[in-house]
Amino acid sequence: MPAPPRDDAGPAPGEVESVLDAVGDELRAALLRLPRARRIAFLLRVVEGFRYREIAGFLGIPEGTVISHLARARAALRHDLSGRIA
Image (tube, rainbow, N blue to C red):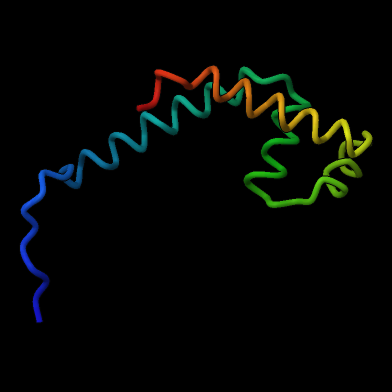
C-alpha cells in the first residue's frame, strides 16, 4: 500500500542536508573554541559515551573536574550557538 501524499510544507530533500551541513559547521567551530580539556571531556562523554570515571582516568584529573569541564563546555556551547542555530 503506497504512503499517503504529504500535504505539509516540509523542507525539500536537498534543504535538509544543507541545514545539517550548516549546523555541523557551526557546532564544529564552537567546539574548537572550547579550551582543549573541556572539548576532549565533552567529546568523550557525548560522542563516545564514556563515564565520568573513565574520562577522569584518560585525562588524569579528578572525576569532579570532569563534571566541571562538562558543565562549562555545555554552557559555553549553549551560549555560543544561541541565535546561530534555529
